[in-house]
Length: 377
Image 1 (tube, rainbow, N blue to C red):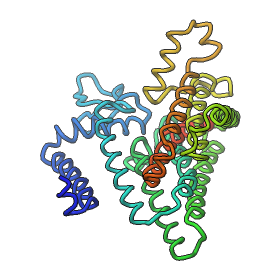
Image 2: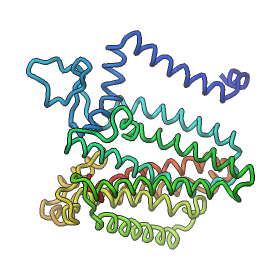
Image 3: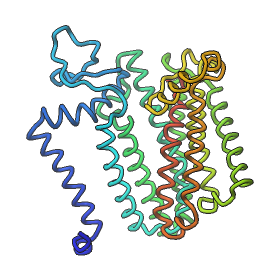
């Protein structure tokens, strides 16, 4: 196998692998549409996106009509059904795809000859916030459908800003920004690629939030709740400060590898943790008509387990989602610990790439949860 890779080159082997897998899936869908497309691709990958886009708890294939399960007529052939969210089958498809994507990113970074990796890490920070904000644009789209029966952004286009496809959408947008910024840097139009890169990300984030603000100001299905972002951001910042001070005072060796990137990692996951606590337990206290419902199984499992273990009187006073914040903080500290000096010294490109992924995994969902509650969608 090593001789094969050395002969053709790792990039060609990667490209051939991706093309072959894509061809197998497409060919299978063409030759066996019912078994491959309907009962596999649609049921586990596209069907959940369709359900999420309409805010349906369940969508039925219904001979290709794709209708809400509750709208099926008696005796109608429902066919396969799908629900919003992930399944073990979809995870089995998305995880290998993510691994292939990360390998491709490494090849792209090599081609672009990026040198200041840490600068790129901080410059990409606005894109991680933008990903969460863009997802809330789709939440507003689904809210519009529930209220008016019409989508501002129609399928299939809205599907590209629904999880998990939104990760690929934001990736390709960020890739375009990185390539453009590197070109500006290499041609001496800017003193560093990180400046236009951060500027592009900030602009995209501003446009997305401004659009949500416009919706809240003009549409009846959205409303602005300013206490949500205030409490979330202040709470996340305080949790980050306490955690960082504790690391510096009691275990300073933990952050020698990540350095100040560690603060970003902790803050990203603190935002996710606090946003969940606020949205799931305290949204009504801060003005929303109802608390949010957890979108991911881990959040739901932690809240459910806490409610089962603690007395009802305690849960009514503290809520049941607060352990999720401590889980997120512990996970962030664990990441900082394993990314020590040797990891960055041996392969800084790979280390920073994984750090970006770790931050995106926390900040993307956290931003979405915060903005969902902020704009009431």
